[in-house]
Image (cartoon, rainbow, N blue to C red):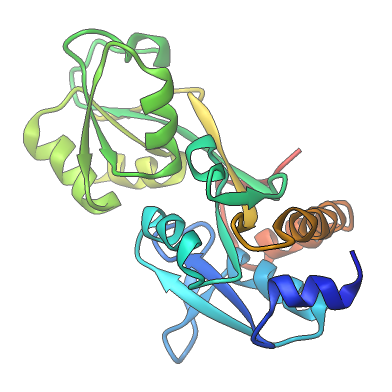
Amino acid sequence: MARADVLSVLAPTGVLRAGINMSNVLLVSSRTPEGGPAGVAPDMAAGVAACLGVPVRYVPYPRPGELADDAAKDAWDIGLIGAEPQRAAQIAFTPAYAKIEATFLVPPGSPVTDIAEVDAPGVRIAVAARAAYDLWLERNFRHATLLRANSLESSFALFRDGGLEALAGLRPKLAADAATMPGSRVLPGRFMAVQQAIGVPRHRPGAEAAAAFLARFVAEAKASGFVAQLIARHGVRGLSVAG
């Protein structure tokens, strides 16, 4: 795909509009003085814009599900979000540039010691609605009950105040939650790793070719050490370069 054709798909307005999930503190770890997003995901988007030779404009979303919903509305040109099959119906994703382990927090006194024990009748799992790990649990868990909250903080409140058997989440956030709940434990291992990728709206003409261009950008960003440098620069723990 020629560069002009890529630009017509990825930056039809002359500016690359990058959808950013503001709720993922590993990927958006701080704010600019103006209140905009700063971190690994915004820097990856800026890298794509630099490669295209256009400015970047961030389109912030409070939750990943809302970012995914807007794929069909031409609200953004690229979206930086976890690649999941449910989202892939509307978004053409690159391979992942980074990954984050997802596991469970269990309350004080819980007999559960292994992730495999969580998918059982009578187990209630608090989860942030439409997070990548929520979509994975919906596809793969058969016996436990998923109770959804609107945000990461409200999912922890639901778990804590509702006396639930488990809280699903990203390991770094669960570790922080555990520190506020003496006796609670983050289970070892993972039930999945959220694959953080870059996507383009699938309905847009030329989307597949644009996604191939973005895939080459991601491959080079990983091979050159650019992604690792961003993780180190922002001091993010719990985020690693995807294989």
